[in-house]
Image (cartoon, rainbow, N blue to C red; front, side, top):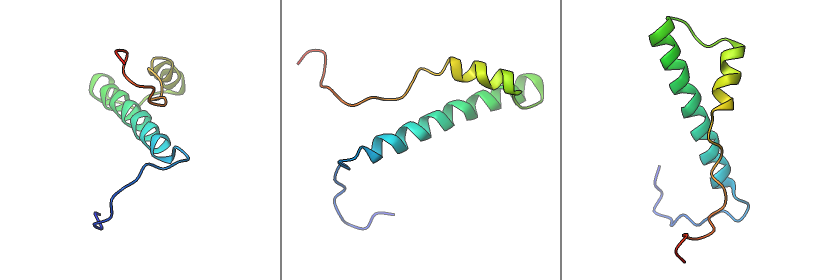
Amino acid sequence: MYDGEKQLPEPDGGHRVRLNERLRAAFLAGAEEDSQRRLGRGLTVEELERVFWHYPGDIGEHRGTPFS
């Protein structure tokens, strides 16, 4: 909920941590939905490990554009 206060970046990187957690959860949820649609069941442990192997990784710290 917006409280009218300007949001400042967190010096400890907490925003990025939460963002990466949400991105991993969304990636897993998409894989789970695909499994339900294609196979009619959730992922097994082995399938889950393969899904995470294909996860592209967390968003790192911003270092500027490649053109700067």
